[in-house]
Length: 246
Image (cartoon, rainbow, N blue to C red; front, side, top):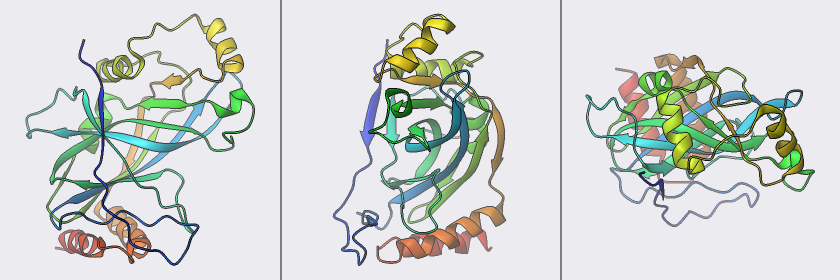
């Protein structure tokens, strides 16, 4: 069985930021490096009666070798490395910065429930991993040209609480993340989710919608460009906006 390899996106020294409460984005280490952004609008249930907004802390991407690459099964993952947390921030938006140019697709997201704090009760501290179905990868794969920021769009999937109905791509990444952990029966799993603070909730939702029209991309990039104004990514935003305005 192939082992999961999660690669941290290289991060260069950050610029000083006037606000101490908002971490600045990492510097672009090379002018040809690219960034990828994704907004995730996802709800999950951690038990039969408990659910809410899922907030991704990390989104995992794969780099596609060529246009004919449609297996979507790659044990080498690139992890997002920046979330803007200041005024106007969207809880579900993440960036992977300092990637080489190329075509990318998101495969999974790790995070928590919005209303739960890490120091609260075990149930409220549950880690959740969401695996994206094959159709999402097909619709979301995005080619990012040198020196730009690519916005994949806002992804919405159905609310789920289990891996039931997972497709082959979701099961592939579930196996990599979990080590092919065998799931228990539904009743026992609900007890474990409630009593075991280290129990990871894995879910395999189905696709609902990906909002990534040209106008949606332009609006997103224009809004987030101002949050990156103290970094050297401004030109990357400008270049991609110019591409979209052609």
